[in-house]
Image 1 (cartoon, helix red, strand yellow):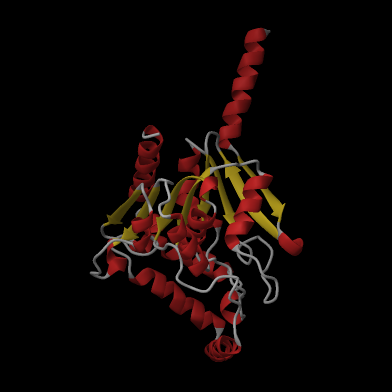
Image 2 (image 1 turned 30 degrees about the horizontal axis):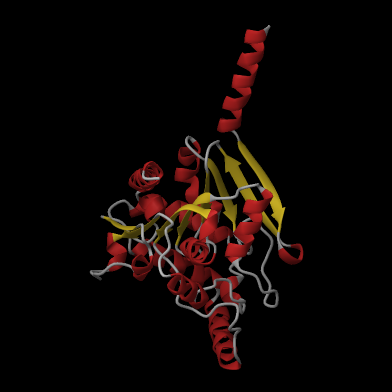
Amino acid sequence: MKQLLLLCLAGMMLTGCRTTQTGFVSVGNGGRLYYEERGQGEPLILLHGHSLDRRMWDDQFRAFARDFRTVRLDFRGYGLSSPQSETEQFTHVDDVLVLMDSLHITQAHVVGLSMGAFVAGDMLAMYPQRLLTCVLVSGGIRNSPGPSEPMDSAERARRDQEIAALKVKGIDQYKREWTEQLMASGGSHKERMRKPLERMIGDWTAWQPLHKEVRLFYGKEAWSMLRQRGTTAVPTLIIRGENELKGKKGEPGELRWLSDGRYVVLPDCGHMLNMEQPTTFYQTVMHFIHAASHAK
């Protein structure tokens, strides 16, 4: 009987590792974030890029869940999460912190690509105590105004002109051009990501380019905080695709303020490198996290 009970418990633990749990978490002013969770171990959170959603991590979600309690989410305004508004001020990183608190996650490995890297960069600068490690992919801390500097009349006028021009062009044409822009920097394996990109961008509401967004990133405020701290000790990996650099040399500016920062350029790929070179990307991130963990 005791052996049977142990077998049942082991089976339940194994099933928990192999199944995906889904849910919603309440954020500010009635908003909700959709998330998916899989696996056991130290928490690892995946942050998606603009115009996309949690599905951009399909090639990594189950793989990371073999070693980590892996969470992927849709930012507010994307995927299955609640929409944004032009009047409600919030930041994506603070939404992520609400999600972490709701899931009882004190610290996590955080991996963000493009817009997701802007969010991970905000966390690195503003809330480093919530990070075990940080991976910034095809992006970093934005050099843009933060919430303390709302949009002025001149910027609002420029946005009105851009929105009017986009409506003339048509959102379908805009989506086609945006898809090709994401594809353009790719290398020899870029066609493998065309259909997933077309599917996600096709499902995207495109609310963001058609409206005046509030300040969703701390940006310049995050840079200021990073510099004031002097150095930040969070183990951080910055990854770029070789083709996206277009011959540009020099290391990312964030490294100057990191006592444990590393920089890797992956060959034969561009902006969406996790979708273009999924195995190489996964191995690079796993090697970094394991090395950082062993160095403690």
